[in-house]
Length: 302
Image (cartoon, rainbow, N blue to C red; front, side, top):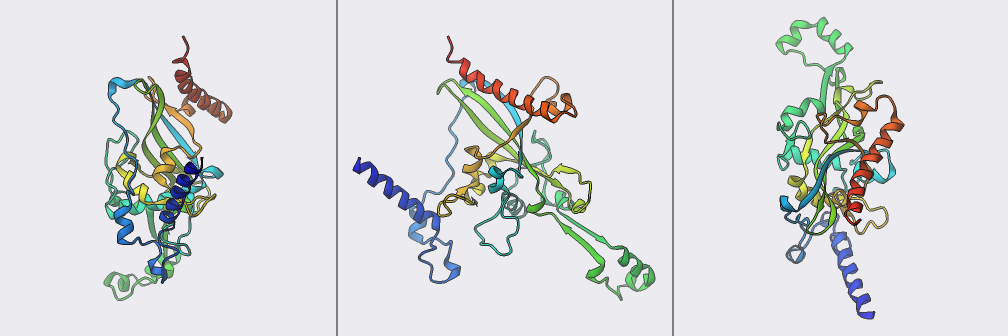
């Protein structure tokens, strides 16, 4: 018993020391978050690799699409922080992590839809993230001095320019695509996350009364696990041990509602056959969940 307690204590202390990232040893603020060469050599800081699953071991499989509402408290770690101007560099929202990776070119598996047919680049999507327009006063200013502005003698002042940028605060939901399957080799129902997509209005519609929420882009999840493993989500219970976005999503530490399952009708959404009835849509979503769970339970009935 004592031996187990000592081992658990050593593991806990090692985890805390690793999670604090030189906070207690830093002599200047710039050293916070930087690991020493010895720490880097001793760390095996990589996402846990997926095990190989042979197609013959999949006894049952079902692809589902879920929507994660960021207004729900359990989903807050995916949403916050929305303002990074007065917070540490190690704390970013999931949207900021994905967008930064796309901008820098580290994330390349970006697509237009959840079937991953057509790739997208940041240049293709730039109009969704940034909107620049001339205000009515600016248009009047240009009309008053058309030749001066055309020749370049005068430059339109910044007060006449309306610029909107899409940020983490504007993301309302995340859509995810995953695959539930029963592994007959291990006799267990498992889940594999395949894709993730932020949902928000386009930059030009920020602040409008009637906003159209769109799927900004779909990211193939297995290709971005390393990046999401390096980014940490806030742990409200213990800030010394943050959880990575990769662990958070793979362990399903969020609440999502199924809005679509693969079906013979061209993968139609629940809302297409349960029209204008939110309660029935939620009931249908639960029915799909129960159908998947019941398959595992039925495997043990003889």
